Every structure is written in structure tokens, then in C-alpha cells.
Image 1: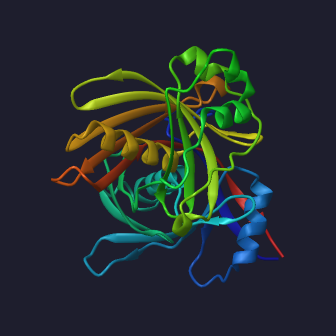
Image 2: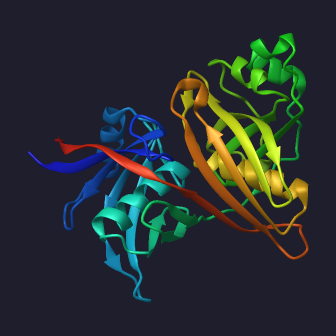
Image 3: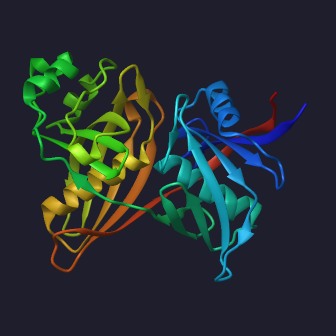
Length: 301
């Protein structure tokens, strides 16, 4: 019976049993694993995402490269943040013996990586879009989160896509007390712009806790129906792009803390560079750490 080696990682943390768990399944050279099998294995792991990491190769410019595919329990994703950081830290830190530079290849495009021995910094594929067709109203927020109806009125609500196929209703709340009121519940049904109307939709609730000239600190929670995610890199990137565009600064560094309320604190770094005209996102860098928790083999039919 064929089998695949795997590890599990806790991502966006250096402390085991914090951060966001990730299943990383290694696909050996020459072993053919179908997309259907990958989906079945991801469902067996039953984590927010699992990745399938192929053998590393050397790119045409001499930089080591690893192809990886990302699966939720029900579908494949073009890009997601915590699988990218976890895969990058494991590939460069473990498989390549602390190589300082590498490249991760996902369905959304190539991801250039710098690794300092602890953190991976990834220049991620991005196509930031702020949906304009129909606003997500305050009553819809209260329908989504009835617990906020007793005083946690949103400061602002925006629907964003960091890349096509990943969509988030970003709800800014006034206080951490309001953020603590957020509960599992309904999935959002945002009306997306016509050419962007596809893929995953989650709710991202956040509070801006500190603002300096070139940096912003945020505490957040990502809820998608009956699931709360300890760390959501793609949502963090979408939110950082949104806030950077609102701030109208060339470069802003964001430190986003997520998962506190569920006991799995995650520390997510995002740096956003705007174009010289400050009208578009030019570069997005996502950074974080990960730590190995388990390893073994999974058999499949």
C-alpha cells in the first residue's frame, strides 16, 4: 500500500500548541498522487488547510524551488498564508538546511522567500480588490453576529479580495471587548463584484490597537460559519492592503495578532508597499515562524 511522509506544524508561532496547525505531506519524486487523493487526505487531516510539498529543485536562476498545493477539507485553494509560511519555513529551514533564499510555487504564482533561520518573509502573489458593487450593511453585520447588536456596532465594513478566489468581509470593531463578543455562526453571503464572484468567503473582525507613523498593530478573528481560524495569512494580507490604501503611505508595516480568544495566539507580519501614486498595491510581504509538532506516514489506497 502506498504511503506519504508527513509532518504537522504550528504556524505563525515559535511555541507548540499555539498558532495555526498545518498538515504538510511530502510528495516524493516520481510518486504520482492524484488531486482526488490529495483532497481525501486533506479531509482526513481535518485541519483548516493541508499542503502537499513536492521535492525541491533548482530554478533557472540557481534559487531552490518547491512546488506546493493547498487544500481545505472540501476544495483546493490558489493561495493561503499560513500554508505558505509553514511550507517555506520547513523547506528552507529543514529540507535545505537553513538556506537563506528560496522560491515557493503555488497555483496563484511564484512566492519569493527570505529566511533568517527563524522567520520566513514571503513576497506573495497579490491582486488586491476592494468590492464596490453593493455595500455590506450594518444590519447584515448584526445578522451575521447577533452578539454585536448589544453595543458592538462596526466602525467600518469592507469586502476585499487579496487574490481572486479568496474573499473576506472585514469588519472593524471599536474595542477588544467587542471583538471578544464575536461567536461562531452564519457564513457571510457578501455580494461580490461580477468578475470576482467566486471562491471562499470568510468574516474577518478586527480592532486597530496601536498606530505609529509607519506601523499599525491589529488584533483580529476570522470566522467562517462554525469554524474559527487561529491564523489567516490571506485575510491578514487583504486587511493590510485595505488599511494601507486608506492610510495613503508608501510603506506600512502591520503586526496582526489573531487567535487569542481561542487560546492559539498567532503573530502575523505584513508589509505593504503602494505604488508611487499611492493608488495601487505594489508589493505585499507576509512573514512568520513555524514549529514542528508531529511526523509520520499516511497510507492511502
